[in-house]
Amino acid sequence: MLLVLCVDLDDDLGRKTGVTTPVIGREAIRDAAVELATADPEDSDVNVLFKGLNIAQSITDETVEVAAVTGTNGSDVAANRKVGEEVDTVLASLSTREEVRALIVTDGAQDESVVPVIRSRVTVDGVSRVVVRQAQDLESIYYTIKQVLDDPETRGTLLMPLGILLLMYPLAVLASYFDLPGLVLGVTSGLLGLYLLSRGLGLGEHLDATAERARRSLYAGRVTLITYLVAAVLLVIGGVSGVDQLEAVQAGEPGALGALETLSALVYGAVQWFAAAGVTTSLGQITDEYLADGLEWRYLNAPFYVLAIAVVLHGVSAYVLGIEGLSYLAAALTSGTLLGIGSTLAFAIAEDRYPTADESAS
Image (cartoon, rainbow, N blue to C red; front, side):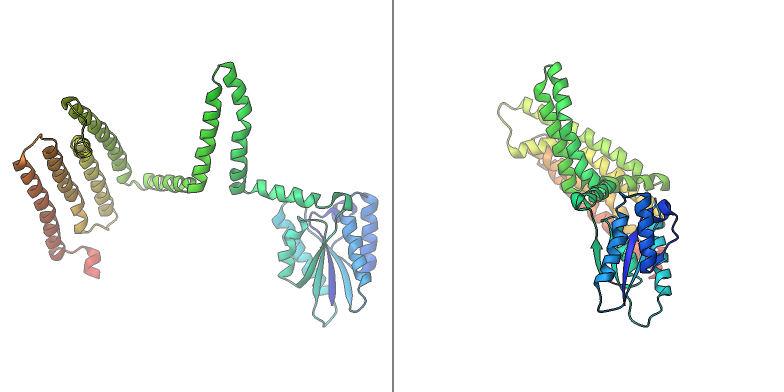
């Protein structure tokens, strides 16, 4: 048995005529179509009802029934739910032992959004869309644009660069007033380039994830939030100190510095600040692990490793720059090695003799 199902998702039939839905049967559909055409001759749902009757009359080799179901005007979720309920009512009213198949008749893409709801209840053979010839595809284009603009992801991708481009003219007028015509093109192209790079590299997602982690750390009272901030400041100071050291070395040298001397000057000036940043962040991580009952002995190696690396780099850079001699380099290399090995051995022994709770359980 074929069920020709006329769909009116926004319930124009019920709102404009007062007809109770679902409407079942050819005569009832014809009467409802006439009432809707009388109430609003321009409503496209009139064509849907008459198209349903036309399809039913054109099929003569099997049993055909016609019905009209409606949704609600407003919420798409509520409209889909009401259409599903009315389809159940129609199916329950069919007195047949044959398998029921449905042919859906709509007036545009918006009504077709309910097709999955109908398909979950009855086998759908196809969808017939009825539109006025003079306005063919107009509603579909409108509905597609509406869906695109309702999607936050697509809206940001489409409208953001378009908005930047549209700002070029008013900015050009403003810049010409202040005699700065080149500034507009540079700023606009720079903004557009930054936006496209951020979209292409997915920087927005990374920034959102970083902000979410920072928010959770703030509410959870994590010490690393403070230590990371302090470490960032120390890194900036270290960078400035390294540049100052490089300038001081260049001022004392008659010729140009080589690549090794330049790198050594930067390292010599910045290594103590970078080491302080590394120790600060590692102590913050250790504190958070202890507060979370996840601290293990080997985690305590981190600040000692940072100090060992800093001692070695300081000795090598000082020797390359001629600030210290070979004996200082040997002492720095030995101290760094002993510090790293000593901390590793000490905490390995402590881990064996005084295991943590998790290690004892395993």
